[in-house]
Length: 458
Image (cartoon, rainbow, N blue to C red; front, side, top):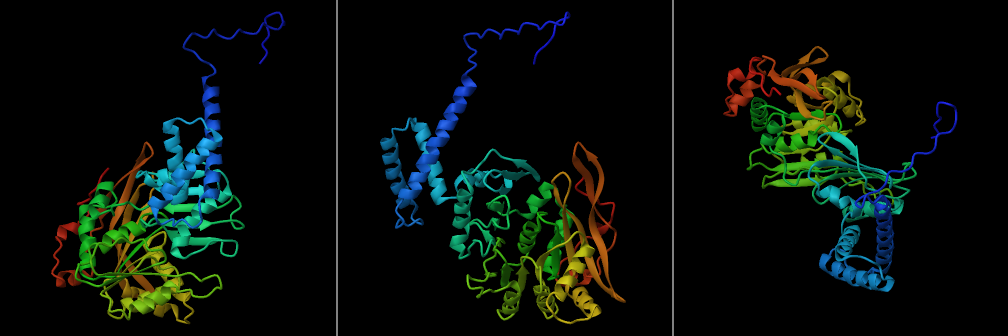
């Protein structure tokens, strides 16, 4: 910028400040140059290793692959006379191993326990979620092919595929983390990955209480509902924690019962001994061989289940789920996407219609009112916190309307420094199914349902 003196003449440029002996102005440039040089070395080494690694090497044999990589790696460094320190050499080798044996650049994010979701929007953009808040990382992939290698490494062991003819796929990692992939031509930014991480150790009800997602009274009530074999639906929007809560609820099922779980991608981490896990199957390359959740629900009824746990109802399987709940399979658990407890029943009603059965609405609503006993609804608040905002009883029918009654709810009082302030409270209503809970030998204190016993104030 040019400045002018009082008389309109150009002022002489200000000389740069003298550098002291410790002020090395070239240091950022040198560091940047080294970083670029290191990135170039890494790219060349990785490309050569991927091309020279023998296709006959068994990738499942980790020790054999590491030995082969170590030999090829040493040869490449010697041939190209690459200037690497011992530390740089070890770091580069581990990154290459992660590319071939693991999920490459995503490995550090997967090991970070503070991260709950990883979102890859093409090779140039990676976001993560911490404490319910999204933030962009500095991670970048070399190109779209690099992302595709990771996607193939995830879906291939599961017998699934992703290509132009099948550009979307749901999968899971060995630890149960949920993965969704979508690639061009559907994605205009390149291959996209969405990974919802699961904790290595499943969350317990004590964890949810500690996180402020519910209170001790609410957990005792839900536990009583599961043990008394009431049918429970866990509802909420995307990423509100439905599967986590379903996992916790499943932990209340007595150990001597036979549990059958049905999921699109196996995520539940039940700790009981007698658990049969079923997973749906997409169609093959020829468009055949698909086994939907609805078919698995029908088959589960022939497997002598004590409890049926459906990871999520999202289509015609809702009708078969209702019929199972109404024909002696009490104590079933499932989840559904919705915005409120009332909306949950409306969505189930719509999903029953998707089954293709020409049933009158009143008959469907009677089935829903008879099948469902409790709706546990979750919300993700503006500050990223996840809470059970409603525990609602399904009381029955009055005319053509399903009658529902809130038993517990979260009451928001204010917003302080971006955090939601509020407390949990009972509504003062004693549920109509209390006689079923007491018949199971479970006795809950009447004071639990008094509104004055608000808990969990923050």
